Length: 74
Image 1 (cartoon, helix red, strand yellow):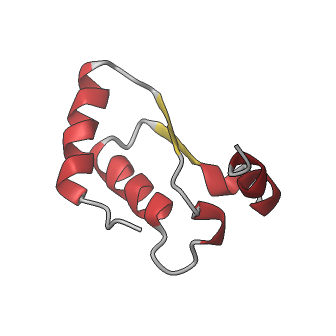
Image 2 (tube, rainbow, N blue to C red):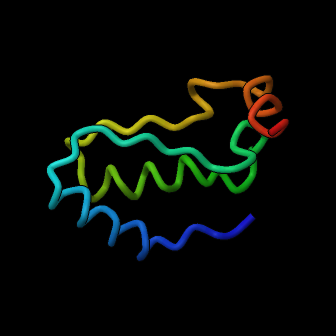
């Protein structure tokens, strides 16, 4: 796993704001089993701190390990 770069996410937030995006979906590799690094949660918190009116969904809240396995079959 690669560490999240908060400055990179803040830069992406500027683009999200510029394009007037209202909803963001975050999906990280291994997120269903990520209980220590919690990349998706970190990215969501950075986005919400920069753009509190944007709706943010993380993949681990809508998918489970079965989906993870299925996606990795291909």
